[in-house]
Length: 461
Image (cartoon, rainbow, N blue to C red; front, side):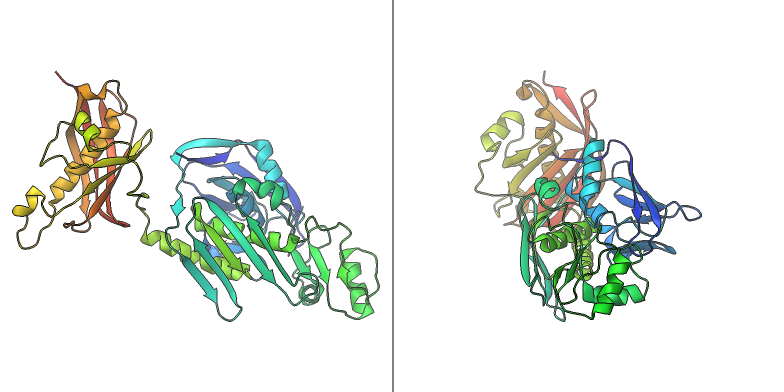
């Protein structure tokens, strides 16, 4: 089972703010399990903390800006992309100003420092949200769209299109987060000259220069206007008739702009708050649609916060009914687990097919057959018994018995034809033969019952 990770130590980066031009320091610190990404404004009284989640995004016109009350912080997406891509789940980020330093306009310095410091594996399981159906968000006005499809890992394809001879249409694909440091992290942000002029006049890019962005000169302007821009960027004057990239540093890849858009998507998807297993296909993405999609994903996660395990009826079970009979003493009509399909050190996934000829349906109820809730609990406990028996030698010589039952919730009735999927996991390690477990019972994607129970494992006489 994958576990959550945090940093093995702290590191700091220094630079100018893109929008303010201020000298800024951002420090990344280890954080406890289930902490998530939090940003602390240490320059403000009381050092307010902003949770880096999609609901706290207040502006996407010039990067991603998060806020809590009066505390704001912008240009966070490049750092978020590095944290997410390198598997960091928990981090406290301290910044002494209203934005992260722009650095070179990419994620590479964050990546290099995370790899230098290293990571620590924590005890809490990594809480993946598994995409099981197509989810789509479209912006009809801009033609932008983001689609996420089922996949066994997180992967992205980004497609961009501009009215420019230099980046008319491009795409970039990242099939594995393992390739992020080498294939995506160095991709710099990009901007068109026609976009810079109004920003300069409004004083919105005081810290921008050719060291932190690809500047594309694709439509001719007056020589005087281009000279003023060159003076602001501290570069040599050039002939206004010659179009192209103003940067001295060449492109890292021909599709570097598309790769940077992909980087931005990862940074904005980090604001979902949980790692995703799914494939994203983004067409003409931008921070606005990225954040809207992240919010939609958070709503989707809240609706299905507890996800059913993947169950393939064609898969060969780890334990069939005959092996289960060797381990459990239960027989008809009380053997309530048909097979075990998955098992880890602290969890088990098992299946029960509920048929119309179950003995309990004769009296519960003849006109409206419903599986008794107490038998659902018993079935989950039998699955838990198989889990704990798996931890001892010669499991056939041991039995498990209920000691305590807590927090039982019946959410939906179970009827003939339902297939029950049990996921039972240890709440704490087994000590002195005593184990506490939490069990969920699903029909399809819906939780029908959950409970917590304590059992004792006893050697048979």
